[in-house]
Amino acid sequence: MTAKVSVEEVERVAELAHLELKPEETVRMSKDLNAILDYVAELNEIDTTGIAPLEQISELEGVGGVTDLRVDSVVASLDRTAVMAAAPDSDGVFFKVPKVIER
Amino acid sequence: MPSETKSYVETPKSLAALREEIASGKTKAAALASSYYQRIEQVNPHLNAYLNLTKERALAQAERIDQLAAKGDPLPALAGIPVGIKDTLVVKGAPSTAGSKILEGYQAPYDATPVAKLEDAGAVLLGKLNCDEFAMGGSNENSAYGPVHNPVDLERVPGGSSGGSAAAVAANLAVATLGSDTGGSIRQPASFCGVVGVLPTYGRVSRYGLIAFGSSLDRVGPIAANVRDAATLLGVIAGHDAQDATSSLAPVADYAADSDQGVEGLRIGVPAEYFADGLDPEVREKIEKGIESLKAAGCTVKPVSLPHTKYAVPVYYLIATAEASANLARFDGVRYGHRSPDAKTLAALYKNSRDEGFGPEVKRRILLGTYALSAGYYDAYYRKAQQVRRILAEEFLRAFAEVDAIVTPTAPTPAFKIGEKVDDPLAMYLSDIYTVTASLAGICGVSVPSGKTAAGLPVGMQVLACHFGESTAFRVARAVEAAKL
Image 1 (cartoon, rainbow over the protein chains, first blue to last red):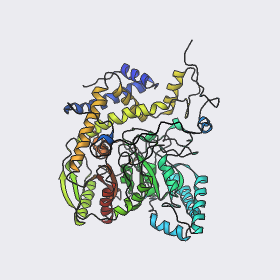
Image 2 (cartoon, rainbow over the protein chains, first blue to last red):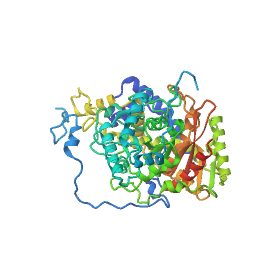
Image 3 (cartoon, rainbow over the protein chains, first blue to last red):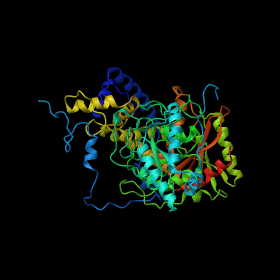
Image 4 (cartoon, rainbow over the protein chains, first blue to last red):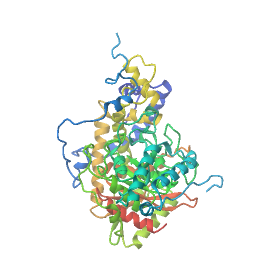
């Protein structure tokens, strides 16, 4: 598939990625994306029928297989005070954000 | 080398030498740490390798080591050794920016596992090292905190993304450092700076506390001034960690001792695909000299075929950016990092915080990755890339049935100048090919210095071995190092 990514499509993707692009950024991104996608299109030369995607290195022959699963139990995690200290806005327990729904 | 530009290159003492000095009391760990801070104060303004220093923690640790030494107690493996940590690895109570404005001021509430392991082994953590933003880049020019300068020639890049980590060792601003490697980010800067960089097998070293870029590719590894020290460091940071679900249970070898074994009888594979157009002739010459030295040391050298090599770069572009788009979704201004001050709605908070906090290269990669994963495109891009990834990995497995190690140049050129755009598409294509293949296959490798160009710029040889074959890679790297090319 040779893509022709339009400016509208870049805006849609930016929306999905929660990125706000300025108009000139959007134009540049669409050019960059098209150049890269044209380049990656050469993967279509390869016949991958019947080949399973490689999702975990550990599944490769001889690499090592499954690691132990942790016991499912509740243990102390991070220190809440330390974590909330990094928050831009909080009441010490919850992270505070602007309203979610516009009324 | 141009006469106006000064070289800040200085080789750190070896771990063995420093250990002897500290154990005997000849050198106090606290004095050693202070001397490193003095040198950092003088030299770092020229290199911009360090972003933040962790003096209190370093000196407290050095004090502890000195007390152990004074009592004659056995010292841990890295007692008193000054090390630097790439800013994509979190250090408790210290800033971790990942080279980005979006994490400016962020202080982590915990230590990354490899960091904790270094400190448990007695290492003195000097500070956090500059890198390309979120580890995305090959020159350390994408950092939001300014580029790093190569100590060999200040007008040149140190490589990336672990540019600060490599430059710090090359300039003796640390005895060793930790970097991270997703597509070459330890190996390539090690090559550009003339130091040793290790790519451990995927799963060999815990990723807990590494700010994630591409989770199926990311590795944490050491950078040091010589191969044996790099092997020692790997031995300290390697091992299973329950906090990293992809961490391997494979036993940790004594890499340093194994590296002493010599290379007589080892079979070395040379893939023609890594010696094609775009390879700088001086780099080719140095690598060929390196291969000759391996023959002289008793290796047999034979060609190996890795026919799908040229597809590794598009595969990498798709997988790494797709995984990055997911990993960077957490930077949204809510729980940590930069929050845009004027957002009136949650949606605006996300968008504005991310727009203000991320640099252009990061945005480009997030967009490409999001596109590759989006409905209608997932199968054509991400899934296809994962299928070709399996082909590439299996090609390496077949090659390693014939040879014990594969050697290639680490990078097609020596360090280029800061600001010099690599406009030649062919050179850019090849510049990633040498390192991303090993990243995709999960195998291990070492970049070892293999001579210098006529202008005095370091050349690196990449030694690749099969999964958990680090000992073999270290043995071969030692032989290249011994040839003093």
